[in-house]
Image (cartoon, rainbow, N blue to C red):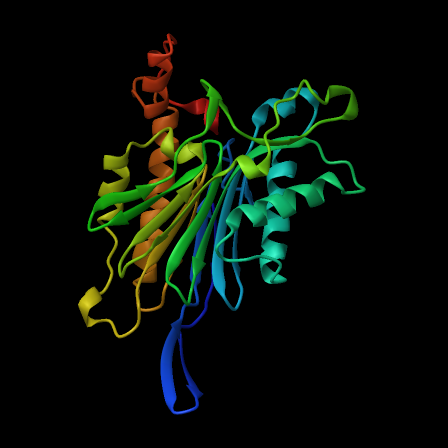
Length: 312
């Protein structure tokens, strides 16, 4: 088990030009991380924010805050390749792009595309595949811009209900869209999608919204109603009493959960909720009698399985 914590502050800035004055509110983030690797060895954290085959990042730039999650394809392990290397490197590259300002907030697909093509040109050979989800909060426009490739994704919860969600991209059952780098002799035989194929969306966020991003390790094991039950436990101040905008971001990468929140939110409550969601998803994944969303989907495709241990 490992927790990673970083602090930021909420900044109010006045801009004076001519005879007019505007008061703009910029958001800064406070983040916490809690997770377990697939083998459940006390949440071993690899280089960067990686748990098991999954990876994530949280990055800040003057114009936006960006979250990303990626799920390394475990099948590469059969060929002696560590699946976490690809997902971890992809997320670290995306993070660097954001910190260097090499992105446009309204174009998260561009972050994914630029990062992926940089991996293709890497002099050090890197093999593997990964799904990916990028979420960008434009701090000035208060709009959320998303890009999702494969079966990772996001939910936007408002007033206890899901008001926005990503569309899962599958070629066929249990075969999500994915970015890949294969050895030259295997090119053409390894499934690989273009980053431009990522599904994208943009919409306004409101005070008190909860934006949850996750890999299939969460969504395949916990249906919406279970996630909503956990999110209801969050202890946040009365929105109407807040002078500054308040939103909460929660990201779960497999059994890894990262919370990103604005100041004036109860940090301990957010961390506990993240921990609870991650642990519940993990327990359900290994319950042989539990009919998970993944198991139900498998049955719909003629397979008789329970739980969803395959996605971890």
